[in-house]
Image (cartoon, rainbow, N blue to C red; front, side, top):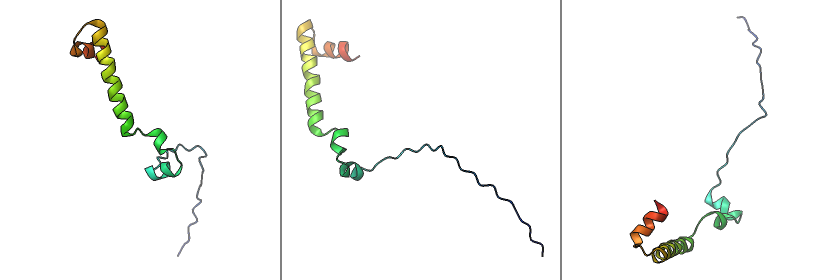
Length: 74
């Protein structure tokens, strides 16, 4: 039986690109969960701000609510 020796080449690449996506538990443990996610109070406030903007624009320009929406957001 003949033994064949094979020369192996081992190389390392020191440049690595990795994106780690933390779980919600990790975010809570780091005390940053609430600062990067919106809560229901935020959405309620945003909805009211949206309504106020539409109503004010409608009143200031003497146009309907629908026209106000179209002029601002479309």
